[in-house]
View 1 (cartoon, rainbow, N blue to C red):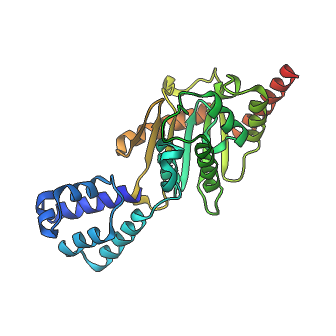
View 2: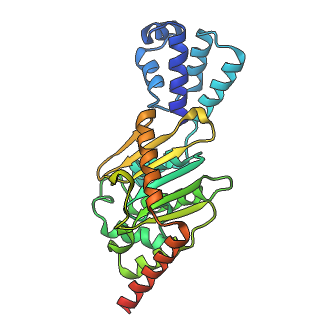
View 3: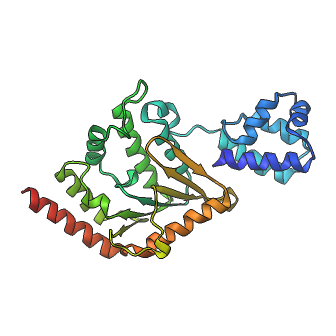
Length: 283
């Protein structure tokens, strides 16, 4: 998010100076592609490159300090960076979005990664061969530890508030052994501080029949100028949205889903009852 914010700030400064990317690149003695990458927010910036731009555009002291601080944070490497390839680039993306978030809201048709027990994580790593498909770089143990570390970041002091609308299918359709699922449901029924779980019944009536087509996550950050981000999850890739109109649609969809879902206390009872039924059926 800091990279995206820096990209917006640098682009706005350049346009305010009536310069093209080529003209700014020439002014600071760098390549057009470097300026383009900075404005695209696709690479971790070098502070020296940002300082060249600020000096060339004669940015004022207050604005200079603000953008320098953003650039400094954007240049930092997150805890996931050294093992991103081993834990999975997609998981690293979510770790990146979660870092520094103030709120996280999700709709999930499966138990969300941030609330999975270690036993559940290891079970899906064994059985879910689409999400955890082997490759030359992925390491199952690193993938498991990466998810556990993401959960630790959620629990950190001053961490984000987290809530999830969990489709009832996630608690009734088995994707792991019954004993693992029952234990997982009991954990969901007793969420930690700053965590709320809403179960969306299969027969729930959703406003405007707004049935979600895929899982999605909504992130907000302490600095309101960073904007809100949506990550849409599918089998092979994740789509990250920052366009305000697109983000608002997902926020509206989330509110409709939460309104149709059971409140947290009722959700906890359903989770516990389902765990009881699973254990009775397998005893």
